[in-house]
Length: 481
Image 1 (tube, rainbow, N blue to C red):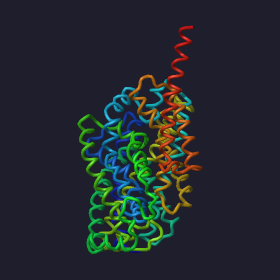
Image 2 (image 1 turned 45 degrees about the vertical axis):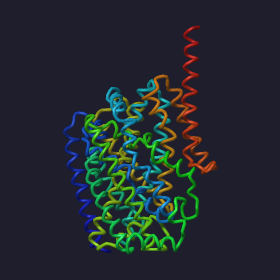
Image 3 (image 1 turned 60 degrees about the vertical axis):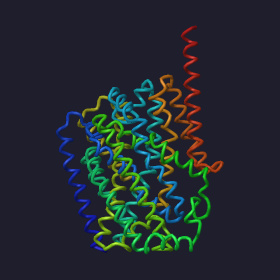
Image 4 (image 1 turned 90 degrees about the horizontal axis):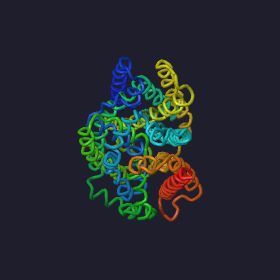
């Protein structure tokens, strides 16, 4: 084991646990357990809001899978990834004020809470939404746990399974004891670590490669396609790249883990500050990490598993103790996403299914016990799912992103901006979105050269509008008869 690398990571984990214990005192003092545990009592300021959105969205894909894909594909992947710069800005611009107003009006604690109140307390809408969140977020969580385990394994020399076990225990402990406030405050710390770590690793890689001109020359000598927008084998066509921007740009407004941030801020000033800070920080981190992945190919050629690029390049180009600090960045990104996803799936099971349909009269003591228990069980199930990982975890993560977007994008956006939208349109949109996404992903990937998510989003929009108009008309006919 390389203790010079490991000790800074251990210190970082101790800080995370300290925040978790501090947050647990708020849980004991609060009068509203659900609002505190799942939303931090809606008290996020601008800086924390920006950092928690960045840290939640900047996941293992951004720090492990993304640079790994950039290592394989070249500068084309950097271009493809940079649409994420506008993500936080776009989410808060579209959802921000209006979504928060409705969420407070409905007393919504989860995205499904909002959808249930907006669409006439439809039981089927809640169950379809819960199914989608549980299925697709399991994929997303598994991707994060794989990334965390690979990072720990490559640093310590432990087997993948042992590293996965350590990571699982660390995350579960502080999420279960601290809830959303622990998640948001640790995201603040993790966002800062991610920003500083990106700067250090990028500079270190450029220096080790002998400067950008030398690195570019080495890439051209190996494969000229690495410095074009089209990828190492020309597979990144303009149609694919532009459609991919729907997945990592526009469609992010439909991700439940992001929308919940739009209902947790304190006031408009906090939201506006988060827009500016979030856009700048996301832009720097995405550019820095993906460029590092491409430049690493000139410094360390021949890496077979793309997800190991970041830890390997950090230990190659930096002093061991600095590498430990830098590698806290991907660990921070992974943990901040995992904790948010765990809480989100837990809130779906507890608040949206258990309290609505299984035991509506449950006491606060019961709700606490069920919340902690569900979070722990989910963690164990994801651990089991992550035991057999794919080679590049970014595909697992992006599969989950696409599925959630195909499910929720139109019920959320049209629910805010189109009053004629109703529960029949919302349910039809979700069912069509989920089924078409899985079918196209399985049998016709990259249909007509575009990303899998494009056609399901189009089909789900048509279903939403069509069923809303048809059912509206039939109801008016019944009333007139």
